[in-house]
Image (cartoon, rainbow, N blue to C red; front, side, top):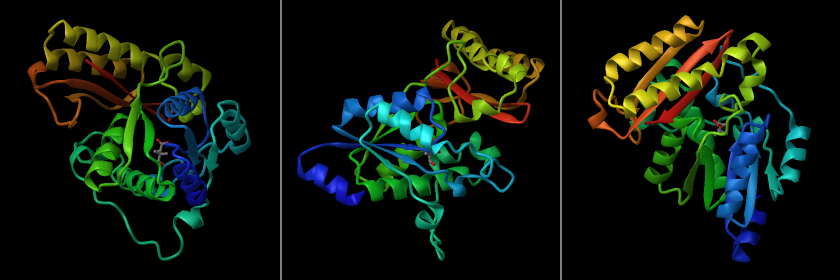
Length: 270
Ligand code: PAF
């Protein structure tokens, strides 16, 4: 990949990376299309990264659909697929992790997945340095991840621009995710409620409704619908720090909830 990228750079072509764990859907293709707007060449990495899964999480059962992914990427005219194996990324003796503070330590997903962002940052740092890409495109669906990776790339002078892209949604509003395929028909029908509640909450806050009251009622609505709620919180959109009033903004609402064992996350700007 380095040789290929060096040749592209020598020809004066910009290179973008779209990091994925495969099981691609139209949200990933939207990332590829966005990458094509920023660079002449687009590499998509497909790597189910073991270091970002806790032992009880779904690493083993995470969907792996390599042939279908490649067909989708060919159709989208991506230039290359980088598909490293676990032993190449983490050979015996691998002993380095990135220690994260700031947006990785704010009590959102980090509270429920304490080693997750360390694994994400470590693999992204490797993918960035391996690819030497000029920019990398990340979806806003994983909003905390986007903030963590943006912070890391700046703090470690990785020389890569992180480009955010708004969440790609199903027609009924559910944020596209590779994990949506775990949902039963019944839970799939219920899942768009998360986005609906978030939209209504954002509208209430834009109308200057009381922050605490509006958030508490939205939390109640999600729980009453049958979700197990990890969190629904209003945070500062850049730092992800806790906010107590709309004046502490710009505000982003973030939610994580489980339905039938599938964990869904979403977020929305106010
Ligand atoms: O968002 C994902 O799919 C993963 O966390 C990423 C960024 C590819 C790192 O493994």
